[in-house]
Length: 431
Image (cartoon, rainbow, N blue to C red; front, side, top):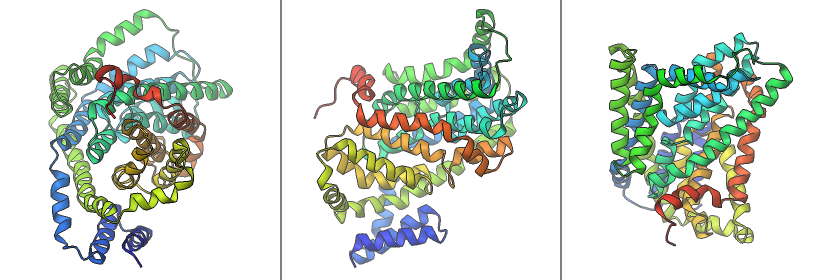
């Protein structure tokens, strides 16, 4: 039995018996190393090289910035702005949730964090307006997943680190899909609310409340302008932008809104440490896994499997997307990106697929993973807030998966628009 088969069997078996994914990948890697008669020091060397890239610092800084901004009261201000915009329409609070999640996504870079920050405010309010709790939670979960697409996105940073692609290009490429997906989610919510008579109880739109909400929330609105504007204006790198975001979140929360206390500041640091510890462990254990994938020529073997359809890259992408979505039901997004990108990235680039497009496609399928049981992180967060079971919220989220499916088809069948913004700002990529 050859090495790749043994690695696959060990990986699947260890996951099936409940071994955490980083350990499962590590055990499978050790099996492959032993079969190839390679010194086990490869594991330590790979972990070191995985931790070496300086942009890796961006992830904990953006996580901490998002936590400080949430604890500091910025999410409340964003919800108020969104409510003054669309709160008067049918499904108004559902629309508010989507708009607020799109705003907060530009601060936190995390889908589950966006779901928790906005959902904790809007889900109880939606239930009071006679939304079914499962649908209220589903709205927050589906809109919260936008946090993984609208920049800054932690998943796009992970993809950039794995593939050595440009973080600013990936951030720019995520803007249009994130906005269009948000608008499609709003369309579905409006349709469902119209049929079920949800919401529409707020005051009709007028400029005065909106201007007041914008002025009251000006510090929250200014945050993504500083973060993203500084990156694209060339004032600072994404890593430096993350540091600026931390300082800005701390300053505004502590001295402007005065909602940030020593207690919740320490809680933000604790949450960040737990998340980045998990990320580093996954990166360390799966870096060697990716190197063995290359050593065993697994990408070339997969290319042979797709040999009959390589003249149709869109079909290859759809098959990969189907695999990603199924895997996303069981595997968390970060290890999914690290493990599968190592396998499929050489294949899709050999077929002429733009690496930036594939990054957006990969993260989009991960967003669907956020919304599918049994490991749908956003579903668990929203279910806990709305006091429903994971089974109930899984039913409630079904109509909101339609925009995600449409977006996957748009990415695959009409991909050129995705790279329009990065090509416009930085020029077309040389090939």
